[in-house]
Length: 385
Image (tube, rainbow, N blue to C red):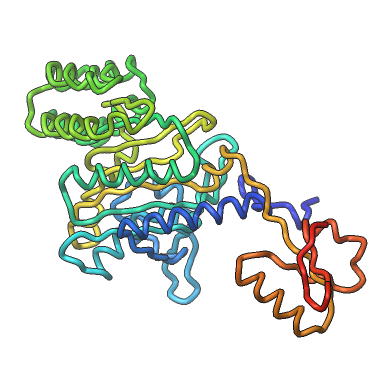
């Protein structure tokens, strides 16, 4: 028998203490984004499927819930990521010629959870910068992400940096078929060196050797010197390594640990350059991630350089200690003008004032009030309970 109050697997309610924690952090982060010039957008939860999937690759297709629009008969989808929606808004609605900075905070829905015990309804918050192709934009977005984690109370951040352009360049240089490229990508993501070597057997030696080196090019920024010596001297690869070196130089001292991972292809199907992910003790997976995705705008008919980051506020707050809910002030249910004025003044100051409706005296403890209003010498005063 199915109980009416049961929720689908990996879909959960958020109860008051955690909800208040999430909402408080959401407001603080949006305020921080705003003072940095990032304007908030609120895209729709539903869109026609091609718009949601354009430029995002197969991964987003499998994550997206699909349904038929009863008005048009077209297939629609529940968004699984807000980044493509931000790219669509930049390309078609804002139509700016220069830089556009956008931010957002809203739920997304996934057909399957990203991991064990992960929710299928993340609360995605993030920021996107459109219109600047230089690494200055990447550095700004990464610093914004680190500032967001600091505000959230996350300390000792471990940051991984990669660049999908290196793998893309090797695929193009070696004229690798699409099917083999997908298999090579899977082997790299799984850090399966044996499978990688077997798959690369028939490729030209320069590309084969470079691919087998990528999983070993992992470590502190000094590993970039090894990469310059060992990888093919192709201009696109050299530029990617230079970009990583410059970004790493700017991040030194700002994170507890900085790691270069040239086999990291996070978001490969739509990212086009530098990619990054932040980790910290207490979270099994990345708590924030992002990268450059210059090609997504082209899919919407207007090519724009773009970079951004996002994180799931629900997962982030699960690893943090939720603060106690603020205590309230209990006010008697009395029709008194002076009392009403006092209540209004307290609420204007941000205090929570709860009216003690008649007949519920025995449940007063459930209100979580630590003060109450009483009449003293013709005035209403707040006293501790």
